[in-house]
Length: 283
Ligand code: KG4
Ligand code: ZN
View 1: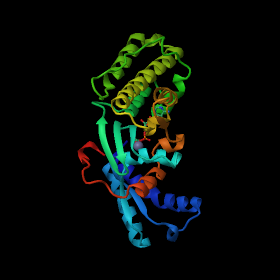
View 2: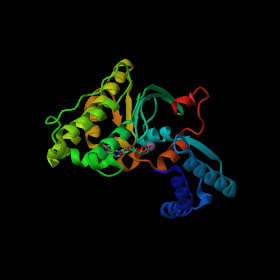
View 3: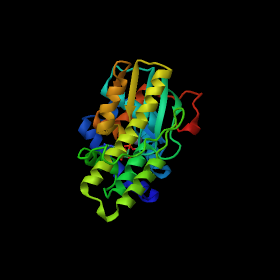
């Protein structure tokens, strides 16, 4: 992805996209109460375009505007899927750039208790998919391929760090070496088996720490969200791990991947960031 080109693309597409969204929702600017715009984390150029357009609309339409943290948006997507869901909750946000375990004691308050030391889960899926000859973004393609594989035929190591930290770079290297060893002899079934093994290692690692966090401080509500939360195995295994201990909410598939509805939801529920939030953690 070329940041400059992505920013220009945002600028070119946003006006028509806004018209389309208002049209599809059947609302006029006068019907709106508030505007919400992603303020980060993300590509700076793209964020600047969004904030610029948002501020322009706020002035033109005379509506208040709120800057929303993208990662908060992923958690609030769960509240669009289940409107009665309220904090306190334990959250796992897994996206292309983050694998974060957070406690959310109240609206607009997040405490990061675990994160990755190197690659994020989505990044690991995308890189593994590229090694397996799949396109970008690789996560969904790897998910489909893994359904045809058996994770026990080509087992890969399960990353395990102490505490609530993640690491996926060693697993990625293990896949690289396995593919190198197989060389020209690699079959389609090998690729499917490796996709299944890779997926299993990432998913079990993600859930092992969620399981620990739930043991450390039991909570009634658990949210697993972000692009990777669309993964078939993660959805099934998360339900099994959380069952009987808390209620699990995962956003519907279309609300897992980045979307604007989740930013609106976060802007609605948590219009202001608490003063004690540490911005260096990205939250
Ligand atoms: O949250 P998101 O849409 O964008 C970011 O904020 O990064 O997450 C995108 C990530 C990508 O790495 C993509 O490959 C991954 O989510 N992803 C998946 C699946 N669908 C999307 N990973 C595994 N299985 C999926 N079904
Ligand atoms: Zn995201």
